[in-house]
Length: 175
Image (cartoon, helix red, strand yellow):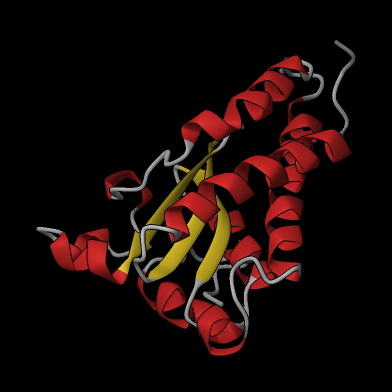
């Protein structure tokens, strides 16, 4: 297999995420948080989400509201990400000589995928979209999550997340 390009990664993530999120939305719950998650090592992504209904079922809603790991929808639709995992693993191994470039390429593919889905109304429009935060999050969290959230969302959809969970930006400010 040839080394997948950022475009091929993005296309595969769009396809997988669309299938997974479509299944998620078919549950009938009202989602306010839908993200792609990767690690600081840029391992293959998965989705995480919270709905108002799932938060109401939580034993610790004040802690869970924005916490991907406690989401009942963590890795939802994982079966749709098999091609993404294959392409991800066909990329060059991340080492000292290429770590930063490869990390940024992988995060760029994820962010582009979420932006593309959003641009065609996949996450809703108008009031519905203003009530839904989307993002690409690196765990453990860092300031780049905040930067991506700002780029991917209207200000109204991230105001509460900024207040509750955003990491300070690299200049020490909070958005």
